[in-house]
Length: 202
View (tube, one colour):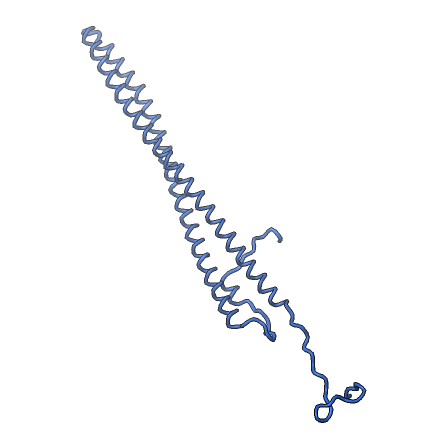
């Protein structure tokens, strides 16, 4: 299909048959040397592309892990809110019980319990927000790095494809180029004299 990407491996370059030799054509040794250089470069670019793909997969795995940690932090935040509610209810029940024993003592204990609960929850919220913000920053950074690697990967593939197409075009042009016809000298008579009346021997 026309939309399929053109793919050329180092083995294809090494096995490509340039056809027979022509008079005053390209130096076959230099052509073979150039083909070997092209094949070596293709192998290097292929290895580099594979390394970039592996790095991209690693970054995607790290990104998935950070997202799971972010979800765990959100769950912890919900649990902290639930703990706050439960702590408030427990403090209120304790306050009611203490109020029956001593109103003033109960009020003091309620105030202290609520203040402590709010401080703990405030600290927990602040810590949770700070950790969540750090995780979001790491996730954004990993996403940007993954996108950068993907762009570099596509650029390398495009350069590799362009170089291979250019080399194939040059090889095709060299094969299609023809030499001018060779002119044969006219036959001479005895002692190098031309035949009379410009006649040529049969």
